[in-house]
Image (cartoon, rainbow, N blue to C red; front, side, top):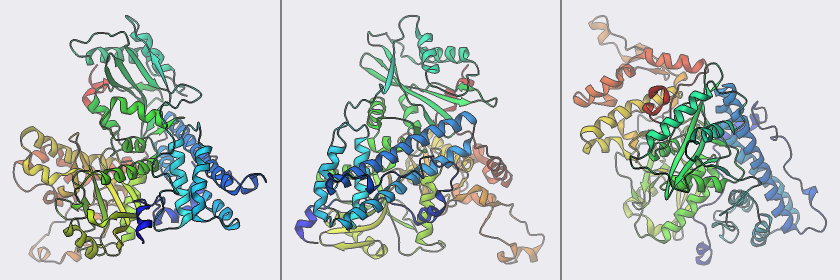
Amino acid sequence: MDEKRAQGCALFSFQGVTSRAAARRGATRGQFALESPLANKPVFSLNDATNNSSVVDTIARLIREGFDGHFARFLDYSRQAQGCFERGDWRGIADINRARIDSYDRRVEEAVVTIETCVSSNNVTADDWSEIKRAYIGELMDHLQAECAETFYNSVACRVLKREYYNNRYIFWRPGLSTEHLQGEQPNFRSHYPGRNQLRRCLLSILTRPRFAIRFDNLRRDVRRLEQAIKEGRPRRWRRQPNYQIQVLNAVFVRNKAAYLVGRTINGDDVDPFIIPLLRSPEGALEVDTLIDQLRDANILFSFARAYFFVAMEVPSAYVSFLKSFMPRKSVVDLYATLGLHKQAKTLFYRMLHFHLAHSRDNFQVAPGVPGMVMLVFYLPSLDFVFKVIRDEFAPPKDMTREQVRDKYQLVKMHDRVGRLADTLEYSKVAVPLDRFDPALLEKLLNETAMNVAVEGDKLVIEHVYIERRMEPLDRYLKTATGGPRKRAIREYGRAIRDLAGANIFPGDMFKKNFGVTRSQRVVFYDYDEICYVTDCDFRHVEQAQDAIGAMAPSSLWSVSDRDVFPATFRPYFFGPGPDADYFEKHHADLYDPQWWREQQAQIKQGEPADIFPYRQKIRFCNRF
């Protein structure tokens, strides 16, 4: 690659990443029962182009129409999810989540096929894409999802260009339009002004404004509880300021078994979360479960370790700005992802990394901790992320293929992560300056991941990489933690395994090195190469030898299959003999019992997911009032 070309290259290709497993599913996607009714409706056609339109303008318009079709489906999925919540159709919500994630790549492929026809028949060259980009900016004037439409353009353009690298002049490697102060046909949120003795009236309006198809079980009770929770949560010297108000976003947030009314309180210079989780009672009525008015609880609710929300929002950038106003430490990368716009999160991370590398001097290094047998993990000390590349060969006892590893990561992407599985950003064709790699790391990459990396000029090109939030490995954390924090981490370790089981995930490799501790002191699992569904396992008791001859019999006579799991053998994975093991067993002894795991299987097969709340149990109204 010549010097001029290298200077114009983006660090990442914007080619959307779809696992081969997802590609194999493509043949049956159209039969998916909960697919959007828009799914089989053509998004655009070259026949729509007028004779007076230039090819450049036509291509720009077709890409914009392709995005508009994609976003219409995105909104439709959100509405379907709210309907599933109202009916108590939890499997339906999970199915819609998988369909929504797949939908983006399907829409991009539709656009690529159409654009390639136009490009080939009109001799459009790579240099013409600078003009197409400018024409596309014109298509997005006053567009309410301009930033997401730019990402869609990047996905289409990079696939059509079919290049190893992409000149920044051809794509939106930085935003072309500002999304600040965008406003749709209706305001993005509604303000409520609870003057003296009017708080209950405001709360009643907040609860009844959304249009649910089911009624509240006891609306008067819920309003009283909310009022009491608000008053109890105020600081001791709280005083009502002239601007005191409660602002609530118009769209309902739906995820798993709950719907959320998301807002904020403003009082003077203070901006605090105001979030109301709504549950569906066994009788099919709505119930207010709690009030989330503390930042730490809001941060956990919007964690990178949870599934994406369904939100029928007209202006995504306005929702992100609203959320960031009371969660200032949250990255916009995380916020776009948690709103279900994970492709936009990838674009923003690319821009952030591009900017960070230009304004930092430290080098990528091998990540601290026990090296993984499947992944080579490295990081940039000044950046809060880690990079994971699949090794060429896996050390025993790992017995799997690279394709199977990728399928495991795709499984996590599609699954409910219940706050215990880290989300990943998946990229292909990553080009990073060679001089930003520590020599020891570079040697490892070239020797241990040679199938996945190549040196081209002054760049190291990584064919496929996963990027995750950086966490401190649990085993390293416990080397220095003492007292209360240590006990909390030990309890969290067991809770993480329980929550994963409730979500039908068996971690497989449960060593502490595969779990991380987040900033909010939660324990999250991040090593996915051996995960599987709990319902695919056969949880068994360890057979006891009846005599000396039986004790010497080879293990092959025990008839152990790949599906067999012996919970009684978990102890060495968790803690050796000592106080830590005793404390863990005090809270989680049933993890050693096959019967507990079988009960989880039975509940999952009945279609009733476990109740895993993304906030503290003690703040639930049923435990307070």
